[in-house]
Image 1 (tube, rainbow, N blue to C red):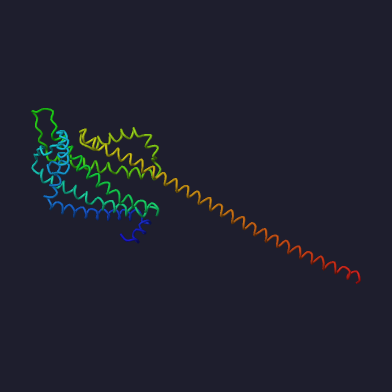
Image 2: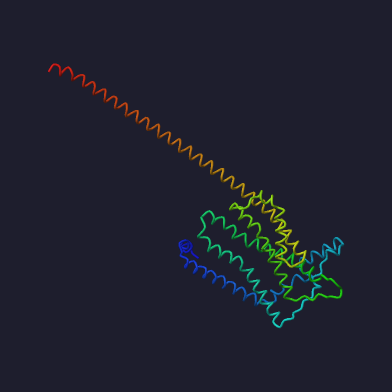
Length: 328
């Protein structure tokens, strides 16, 4: 999209906006389709990523195994490799292949989607907000990827280990449906990606004055309950996943308080500078007005003096003419 198109978009009609939305959707769909085809053709790599959390060589599993050996604590050792997967549907594995390619294409295309969304909204924003919005365009995909990696590398293997190996009786063996396994991995990963958007949400609300650092501190207990409810909704029904989502959410909440406080200090500084500028302008205007008043007074005094001199000359001429009139 060229600069001229962006400038013209501010004066588009409703139909033209719909046409622009259609173009954006077409571009996003094309990018998504290309990525899907590429990932679908890379079946081995994509499915290796999907099933990596249940392998001993997965970084998180190796880390916990090392910690268990170092601390001589078997409780720290996780055994996701004991999870046995099966497929009970005719097209189950084919659908798994399609689903994994779709998810991968969405993750890769997410930054481009945010960029297209920003290009569409940008013409309607004031110049100052345009500069500020660039930060959201850059940070949103970054926080999304960070949350996704946290969910995939930390929450997913622990959740799979807990849910896959949990038993209420030795007479019941766990044989996990492969679609259920993939749903768990995807849900906890995307749950963390969504949770990691909290700092951006707090910055946005603080920027428009809807939340304050003092208010966030005051309602911290309510926020904790809300974060626990959020973790319970977006994660599988197990305590481990919920806690692993809640802990980073609470840390990000405290980080958001710092962001809100920083924004408030910056706003107070800008307001102080604005007030100082307004006072300086008022002082300059008052000084200019006084100077103009003094200049007008001097001009009036000069004109009064000239008029007085003119009157004196007139009176003198009149006095000289009076004797002549008497002689006549």
